[in-house]
Length: 467
Image (cartoon, rainbow, N blue to C red; front, side, top):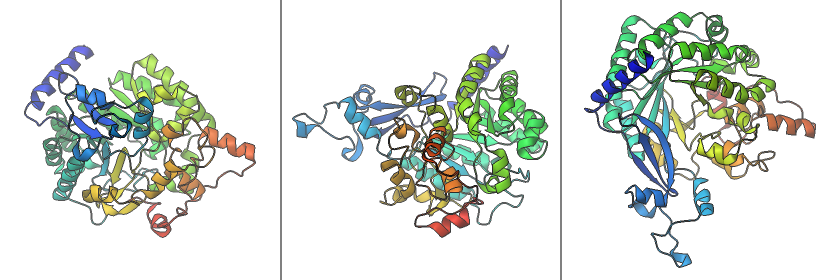
């Protein structure tokens, strides 16, 4: 019966989407391009990096502004292909635009979760953007070539104009995805179900950090019943409804219970997130008690693989977990094929606060720019400087690590929080911990401090609560 229901939902959604503009199918890059592949029913399923030859085979042979390098200097022509080493070098350069943007549409949420990374409140933040502002931002993202947006908060489902914003994203060829708490009244949930039934969302994930009492351990209150109700209702109207789970030291031992629950509820995926030192989660006592132990980080990959096979569930790992994946030494080519990358901030993704302020990711201080000026900011030589500088010249042990180009040094937000410097490797990486122990280095402190670079005072003001 679940299979038949899913087939019905997919066909029903396909009929609805015939009236919507199709999502962006391709974007040129120096290495070739990025193709968005979807099924016959119009669901975007993957973003695939392809080289020049494959792009030409798909009919994309007119890159703008001489974007593709030529081999004319080697006696070839502009239409000659490039060898694998050249393509790898081009892949190491920043993309022409992010693949996705994480938009914090509002910082309004009355739940009061003890680890909320934005420090959301019932009143929200001053200067929050409205519908016209976010539509302008979507226009800019579409012009830049962004494929997806992840809509969050606060709680974006509370916004009365969310449906209009979804329609605008679709009109601009952008796929809107949603993360929601489910902690709201029936009228709000009914609206969401209607938009899901109309095929406006790509993926919807309900934030459920544990089943039953495990939920309360992370959030500080018992909201599991409401979150479960939202998951069930949304899944009734869309096949692409999953779960976001922030793993903590207390709940990692019971993650098997979450997988079994997700299977029972027919969730289509689980996305596992690392607890970040941002917002209320940056408080010393909260982060110290919540962050996973080194032993748990080492157990993460084998545990998740076993549970994924047992319950036949798709699992996605937060990019900040990449050091924990690389610790087990999978083939780098496999990680690249599966798009397992570390810190993608300022390159594969960007973020925006509720005021439109642009940042490299949702857990890092904002820049002076706004999201509706993304292209002009990225074109400046010092854009997202700390991230680009780290990737260009990482310190040890990252410099000599074979996974450096994939892992990218791990999470910059954790590095700033524990080492007070974004130019240090992720201090919770198992390899970094072993390296520091061998060198006799003292463990990092757990005191939030500013980045040791220009903009220190700005970072110091913005890091504790990202509003």
